[in-house]
Image 1 (cartoon, rainbow, N blue to C red):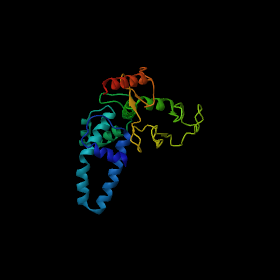
Image 2: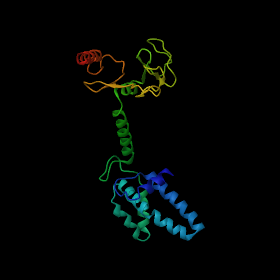
Image 3: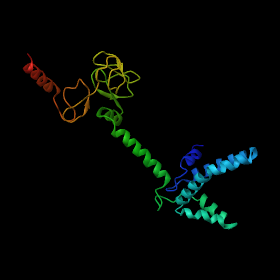
Image 4: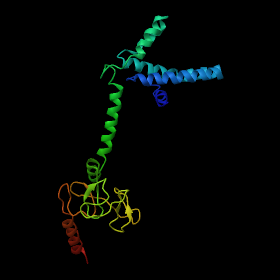
Length: 231
């Protein structure tokens, strides 16, 4: 049924290609619905015919594109007897391999869309999330060691890792999600940005892992400035 509804949603899409299975699934389901409506009421059958007319024409043209033929070949059905037979042969043919003059192969399009989606998701992760994703590791909430997600105890300090892979807030010790940005209990910010390179880091970090910025030195400078400007 997914193919059927996809075709209905693409009712005005006459460009590109559609694979053979999708075309025939739509045709089969539409045929079954037509038989049922014909038994119920000819009026309903007529209404349904008008509804699927445009989507059916669009998917037919894209199926012709998939065989590297122009959509105008649909007019071959006008020729009595031989026209519908030739048209049927076109419709049962497999897709042309690789790209043709109308577009890339439908299966390749789906794979490319999936790859682009995955790349978009990965590009929007912070540095810690990317590290965990690429290496299948999680940070120990006791010592900060990156350990394998499949283990139950940290190999560096022996801390037991929760099954949910959660950590605790450094301010109130409440259990929080691993990549939470704020503690749900005390509201403290759990992620800070390096002022030099804007890399997102743990608030307890002393040096930026990306550019080496010294947070302790920066904090001392801030305290000195406050003392100088004080009463």
